[in-house]
Image (cartoon, rainbow, N blue to C red; front, side, top):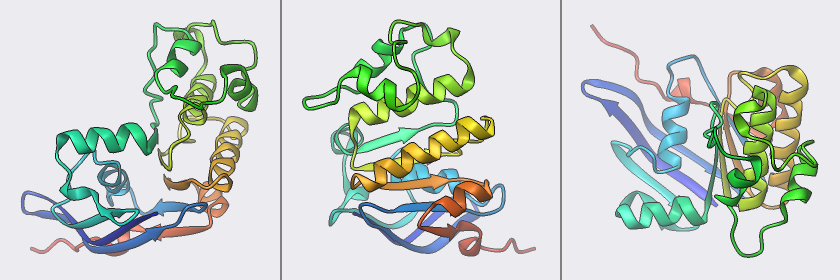
Length: 211
């Protein structure tokens, strides 16, 4: 599904990581782990083409997506990618239904079925800004279920949630992987890590600082 080869990322004179290789197959969940500041979110953003790596390649189903121009990157994010942000990235003054409509395309499941899967049945007309943090993350998950992306990237998706909502998020991400999606989760949570099929320690690819 997605393969990273010899990837590196630098900010000026500082190299965050280099010679990074990993593969995530369809139907698998991978946890990106490592110390704070090791570059988990940066790697996730590179996979989602929100940031450019300094070197190396990212192959999606054999295509080198690091070579795509602006239009190709937009198409990749529109057609293949689902992103679950820690801050939810919802339209706050719109209804739940309107937020789902942003991701809707031909063949998407109906709103009530996906809202039922995340415990929000019957709440499509509520305004997002009136929902709790856990409920907003449920809406973000429902948006993923509507979009049905091939690749799901999740950045600390349980970081601001209680244990119940956190477990629900992991369960839905697992469902998505079982349906054939590749799921990559940046996390510092040991329970989330252990729920994944494998873990990749980004810290191990970090270049030590030199004096």
